[in-house]
Length: 481
Ligand SMILES: *Cc1c(COP(=O)(O)O)cnc(C)c1O
Image (cartoon, rainbow, N blue to C red; front, side, top):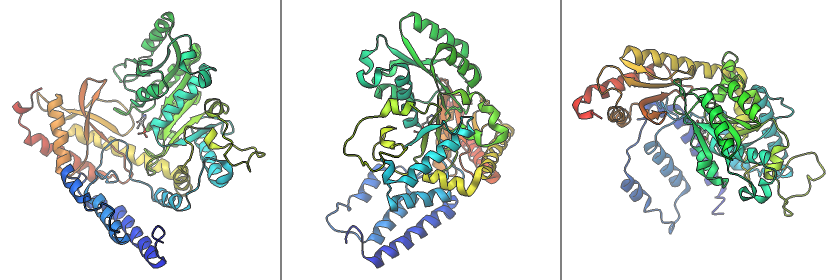
């Protein structure tokens, strides 16, 4: 009974759990956005729990709920202007709770037929939003965008080099290379390592003034590398860069990929949500030509982490990349026309990731999501205006709600030391979370992204005030680069 708990205790635990979730969901905006960062304090808080004497279940729940309130950067807070981490949808929270309780195993279709079909259904519906034929759309839910990008590299390899799946990289008569821009996500470097290509196989193409891949440079690199005996196999275009929200020229990159016979992957981890809003769909023109797409539901679709999605318009490629024989797997589905996800993706035992997307979409509908995204885009526009009138200079160009800016009111206003100090002061104030980054790996900027459907005009004002008070407290001379 110690794992299941007595009936009464369990029922009380559920009540307290729901109360804890409800109070976090409704009261987080009253909290500081950022926690104290003191590793020694946290370790001494945990030291008493050495598992030699059992703790009451309600006490355990209380310890963790209180602890999370106090010690986390509250990404669901409307003044978290951060790294695409959303306030989770209510339906997504409910879905994840159901998944934990029912614990469906999605490795084999026959173990969780409804769950696997729900995931395939959602994948088909999302494929259609990107312009794929829903009947030919295939894919898999992943832990996140990084796993989806890794899947993309594996499928591109399987497609370009039929011997790769069995004989590996060493069987190839040249070094395979893939092409990304310098503003692409760094998960491609890890994917290249995991695939045995090595990070040097990732060729980073410079970006233009708009911070999008320089298409002429891509063509030139491809020519040069082919002449040098390398084996280009894949081009990645980013639709909504992590740094600056820039959508690279998908249609032109698609043309080059087609001319060169290369697998085109579009990393739309965050920006792909534009496909859900009719008037923004034009931004993604060309994405329908991608051989595969990464789209993260745990970013702009606001479901709890982790929920990435790999989509492809080649229904046979997952099979070619991932199928193996496993005699111990369930056999009762063998005569049906169904797919066992374990033979069709990177994971084996598989959590029901798609449910939180399905249930969120069921209740919000496309219209509900379009409304939420429009609101966030509008908040991004208001933030740009507010920053400009407070003397900040916006330096990135995107219709998406991600703003990179420097201080136009002082000489050191674009120096890394000053901007880092401003971000740190805002973070330490607890009033908001923002960060700095380096555009094109060199230009320091402050970065604020609207990631929360509840962020409103008052939150933007609070951020601009926090920035103003940081600016006033930083002496010019102490922050020279
Ligand atoms: C966030 C992001 C990723 C990585 O996704 P995770 O869900 O964090 O694994 C990949 N590509 C882009 C463009 C991203 O913004």
